[in-house]
Length: 451
Figure 1 (cartoon, rainbow, N blue to C red):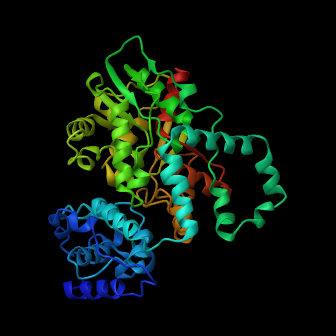
Figure 2 (cartoon, rainbow, N blue to C red; figure 1 turned 90 degrees about the vertical axis):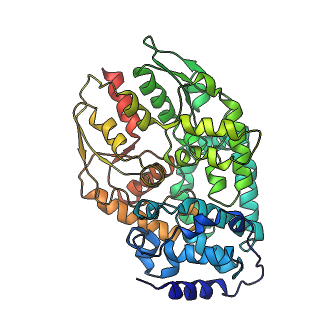
Figure 3 (tube, helix red, strand yellow; figure 1 turned 60 degrees about the horizontal axis):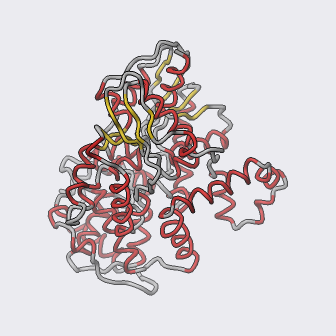
């Protein structure tokens, strides 16, 4: 086990690395409750669970090394540098370290505050990166109409055959190398989005509960069919489903990429969209979003106008598997023989500590054979936009995941996060495995429809 002095020396090494321009003092880490920074006891139990440390074996690429560095910055002994920025963006944010940690370190909070400092100081700024962040984080993901417009253009490109023609003629070779590598990861956009597939209020004959349904952003564009399946599964279990039209991105992509103030803005907008007093629960079917959505109470705890509502929201927020297990899943009648393995999305198993409930959903389906996936909780390399920002490391993780999937001889891989599903679909195409990627709730809804 590394001594505290060795950790401090490692921190100084990266903290004093040539910043190549900008550097500055911390604001967000300094404002953070210092007890959060002190939680780490340097035991090293997180090391074997960390994908980046597992790959490099460098202390700085581990949660323990990163926390040591954050603490020195919060103490004012180091400044935020370009080297620090690169290190924190090399981290997946998969939160496997939180599951392993015996001291209960809130790494997700440290991670988000560190990235907020990086963006505030601007150590990684360059014209291309700035433009991408303006177009995505500050424009597209803050404006649902803009996001849907982009989605419809992308659907037209795919559905018209233009995408096929571009690939067939190998015109992608004209793209810059990074974009050329990313092009196969483009998710398939649905013809209709959730506002066309789900009515604002849908009521079953045997209503027992009333729930709100979050449709998401990427989930709405690429997996709106999963939103429809979620509504059907909830209806089949006696839930009236309320789907407000004025929904916004949950803000998780902003919080994870150093835009905490924008994340708070989007949290407030979503709180205004739902009448919590008339709902038994608010439901999400996207693992990455769910971890952030459940954190609204903490995110807005210092906001006098929204703190109380945010705490109420967090108390009512449920992942769909969690909710169905809580109220008791009604087993479908129809048998659908299929061999299924389950990939655990990081933010479902590590962020929300939900592992049993998705398996309960799958095991409730007659005829379904659930085969456990080796290293089911090991990150697939999607991690929000990690497959865009760190394609080499992401690809290594995807190869490892697909190799494990191949050993199961499953026909279907169940995944409960849109980023994971898009990543796994790309892996299926790349390795020609002939597998189907499906949300557990979609498999349940399919069984209900056949009953």
